[in-house]
Amino acid sequence: MYIIAQLVTSFIASAGFGIIFNAPKRTLFQCGLGGMMGWIIYLVLDPYYDTVISTVAATFVVGVISQVSARVYRMPVIVFSVAGIIPLVPGGLAYDAMRKFVENDYNTAIQLAAQAFLISGSIAIGLVVSEVLNQLLRKRKPHQG
Image (cartoon, rainbow, N blue to C red):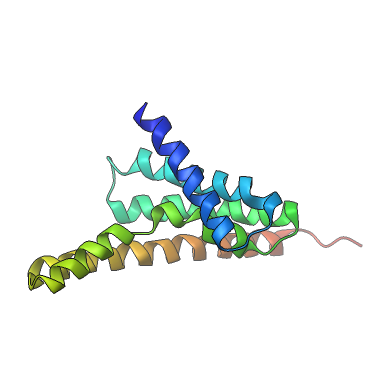
């Protein structure tokens, strides 16, 4: 039941942010699906690997799904990738870091801020790696004609 609740909420969060970012209606299902798939990967890998590694892998999957969706629906990749990474964004961690700064607990605040920074960087790395692989695969195709 826990996994189903996680999947449903990640789908709703991603599709909901697609609505907020004015993604076309016909792409909202793919936005939610990308976010849900990324969250599945994160949930499966996080108990076994570091959170940063799990986030890179999950974001890579979101990036690949976004690349494929962009080709199929002839839309910019960012329409799918921004909504897809929403479940992975460490907003709660950043909030806790800021709260600790306000409470003058600087040691804890710096630890939380560093962790939020690393997770944010891993999201960027996952998206960049998927884009680079997409570009490499496109260039390897033999020329027609």
